[in-house]
Structure formats: C-alpha cells, structure tokens
Length: 98
Image 1 (spheres, rainbow, N blue to C red):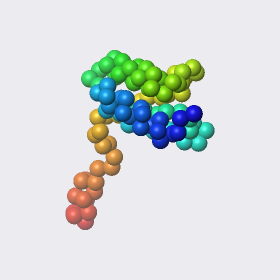
Image 2 (cartoon, rainbow, N blue to C red):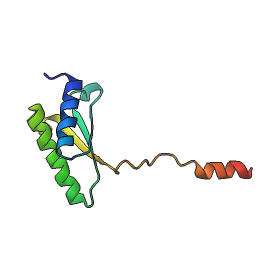
Image 3 (tube, helix red, strand yellow):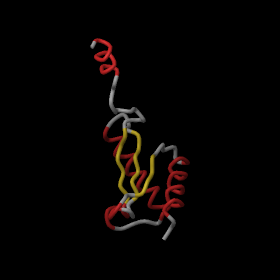
Image 4 (cartoon, rainbow, N blue to C red):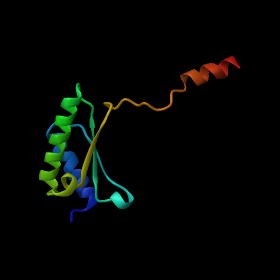
C-alpha cells in the first residue's frame, strides 16, 4: 500500500503534467481509503464529464487502483476557484445605516 501523502503527490503531479488543475485529498473516517479529486468546471457538462473520466483513468494508471467504484476514486467539479462563501458587503451597508 502506498503512503497516503505520497499517493496524493503522485496523483497531483500526474494530473498537472496532463494539464489538469485538480485538488486531491483522501477521504476521512470510513472513507479514508477513497481518493477525492476536484476538477474545475468546464464549458459544458459533457466536457466536465470527459475531463472527470480522464482524471480517473490517469489516477488509476498512476496508483494501480482498480475494481469497485473505479478503484475507490471519486471526482467532483468546482467552479474554477470562484469562492461562493458569505458576502458581507450588504452587512457593512446595514451596519453603517444603523
């Protein structure tokens, strides 16, 4: 079994070499053996699905994972690094009015 941190670095380096900007981590708790990969959302859903499939294939080749649930590799998309957290600009305006 490959060390968790070594496996993450191997996958990140392989995806970066393929031109895929991805965030890679291991699961937690009972899913600690799963690899979770986040890829940037593409122009269309079909392009995102194709990139996700390519990501899984590259990861399987690098790590040797295979079998059930694509070797326990999960991928999801993120919105290109755009943060959708709390927006406090309206709050500041309300505080200044009170």
